[in-house]
Length: 188
Image (tube, rainbow, N blue to C red):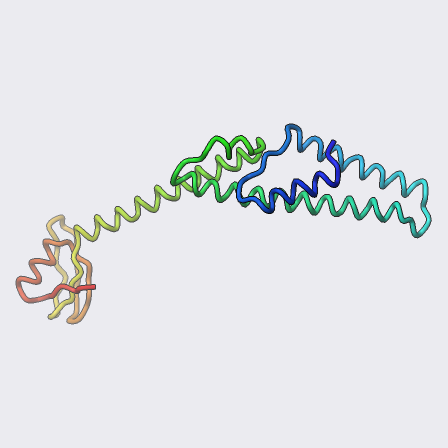
């Protein structure tokens, strides 16, 4: 079973280290046992000594509250480190040392976040490549004259456009309009 000073020491190490700290095997079971025993001790104290002010009861209650607060902080710190590791791993990979310090639930969180980060990266790359492709295939132009609606090579209607309108049109159409002095290139 884990003790209050051990919980304090584990939190201290986690707090002051950039790396995920190793926890002993069965740590969660030991913590659950500790909390269960402290809660049982608190209940027993309340039954045996129901007087209004009981120093032992107050000390046990405060220790239990502090232990729970320290454990919440410990797991929050660990989750933050795991999220950061997921971001790093998505770009560079992860060392086996970091993985071995994770609890089973933490490993699952890591894998889930890593998967989502990679999916998001792939979507962003896809979007960026799509934008580049559109930029390569299209040309931004400003009209110098009023142009009625017309049909492009694939039968799609384009326009009408007023003088000073700006449009991003397929390169061949834009070049034709520029050559005929009906439009000019817009440089960004």
